[in-house]
Length: 87
Image (cartoon, rainbow, N blue to C red; front, side, top):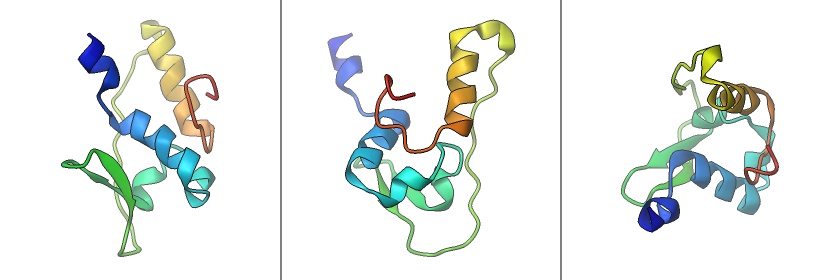
């Protein structure tokens, strides 16, 4: 469990990118893939070189899922979140 807590996920890397990059704070988690690319090997977001359209997907969460549903909802509206508390 300790190793899983330390592993970087797309969401925690999103928080880290918002802390270090002022441009990243202008986008919601849903808009993020249009401006940044997820690097699977480094497990980090890097700025997109080619501007254009990109599709980012968020998993469906039913309203009956409680906190998971509301977390997903917050990620679609709140821009520039730097941590769980910031959401």
